Image 1 (cartoon, rainbow, N blue to C red):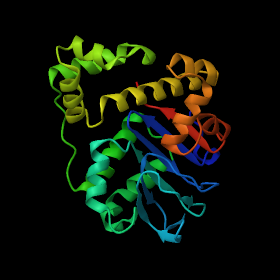
Image 2 (cartoon, rainbow, N blue to C red):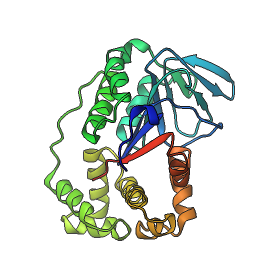
Image 3 (cartoon, rainbow, N blue to C red):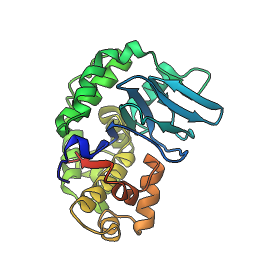
Length: 265
């Protein structure tokens, strides 16, 4: 999708395997829940979060998976990071910050060093590389650990290369494990250890991103769903909604306010 000028769009959403970053003015129209772990950081003042127990006004928050919420950020700009709940980094964040509640306000001092950079880029259209670096910086700040350089086991590196070449609907965990000389159980364990997300979740993300790429290329939801291995467009929409709290068609119906960019390739 072509980039639009900042004053024509409220938000830009970057999608890739296991993570989504949204930069701009976020305003949820209804209370919703999603499977993704959510980190929201205000780039200007505070935002209002509506929860079942009442409203919260905060500058940074972690919302654990499947928690009902509604965010109103009309008076400012936000950075919203969505993480697959089965990713290792999600577990590390929950372990680090969970309190008595599954919605936790974060110490603004943790993310304050990033706000200037996030705010500046939120008014532009960052590249996928910049968006990923922003996510790495956010996670490093929250976990107080720099993101290490990944040196994959050669068998996992070969498996990832194979997954990039296969159609999303044709990938089989057993076949991939055999192709790199591992049993299925050993491959699944090593994949999560090295990549940070279970292989079946990675395959789901491949399918979701493949469908997203197809829709961005102008294909119908039905065609995109079938090519990515979903039963139909309804199955694709349900899966997308469960993960992110909105349907894939909703992303594009609201494209006046949200520019969707796939960074999966």
